[in-house]
Image (tube, rainbow, N blue to C red; front, top):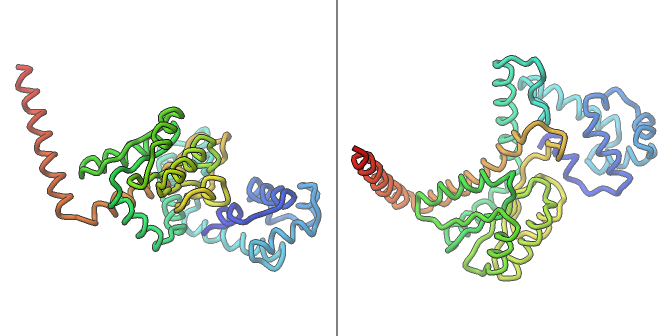
Length: 290
């Protein structure tokens, strides 16, 4: 787990959150600052700064900075992780852009993998395989990942319903039962409609699975199982969702792969049979055009 992910993972008071936010926003300059300078910049106290560092498992601010230096050295040895919010800059040539986006996505997947609970993953795959219907609740920013998961599952005759609009989400959530399984996608974990749908699903006896950014949030608190992606992106000031997109896709790909593996030969044969049928339909359509 990288240091920025760890910063987002611990419970802090409102005063301590100011220090944490400063650490995250000024990651590059913190190493050259003193405890007093951080306290002044955050309108807190030396004790608050030290307390944050201790909650993160360090002896104090100097020990925290030492960890930061270690992390920076590790990053530089790995060519460095681009800024998740601005992985490209004005004037970048195509080679630089290609390298930065690839490096960022690789880093995001590696970090998502490090946050996995394999015991929980195996249990959730069992539930997914046995569920009569899987409902995916998402917003416009995550619908592409949900649709891709739905398409994969469709090819092995697994029923997946994607609900993306508030009315549509509420409709399915209010009718959800023990025969359903719900996957809820929200980067912030604070999407009001998604949290409400999670509660509705649980009320109907449906097991709920969240995919959200790492740390404390409302969605993970109300779901039965939680899978996390790196909290590297700012909500507004970013040029794209490159890191979170990689995280969402990776976890949903794991879910699909797990379902497929449960009955590998039968799923493969079904996929081949229906791919062949689709091919015949396309051939017949082309012939009809002549």
